[in-house]
Length: 230
Image 1 (spheres, rainbow, N blue to C red):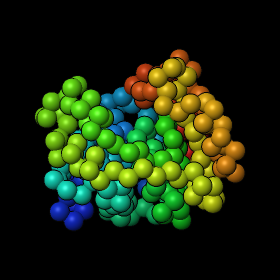
Image 2 (cartoon, rainbow, N blue to C red):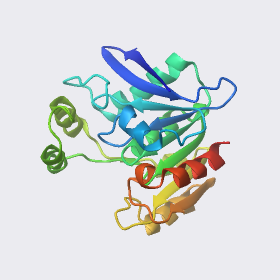
Image 3 (cartoon, one colour):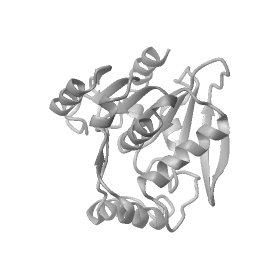
Image 4 (cartoon, rainbow, N blue to C red):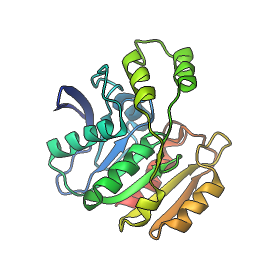
């Protein structure tokens, strides 16, 4: 594993490169709402056997926590900064939880770069973060763990947007990964409706796993992902 940083304007973005292989198509991973690359990697450490790049979007991990600039456009520009730095123009992309919204948005904005999209236990949409959400985060984490700049900015700049219709116009394949337990954030009925709209999509349920599937069932999740991308 290699840790790297790239400048996106005034913002510094941290990312991890795992199993680098120049002759393989990488998987770019976007963790959840408050998760950085290091924490995400910890769940899959010593279990992943394919080339992937895990990004700490601004406000997460060791990336900068600016006072402003948390729109979904700002956040996917962090993905683009890493992609450009690594000079990759064809890759798979995975988003877990809220990261699935950012991965979906990036995919419909730059479909020519996407080999395949993995939506892990969430919907292909960006949520409307609110103060109730930020207060819940504050009640569980201190400022050393989750930046006040990030919490204030993500709520201030959030605009809800669904990407299902836009994804239906894209030709790349899509995999929906759903947790089997009750805390899943991807209801089965909703997942089936998404499948009806997308022409090149499939669904895989990770049985006996909750929403945090990369920590609860990493071997099974990584096996499913490897089958999709290899």
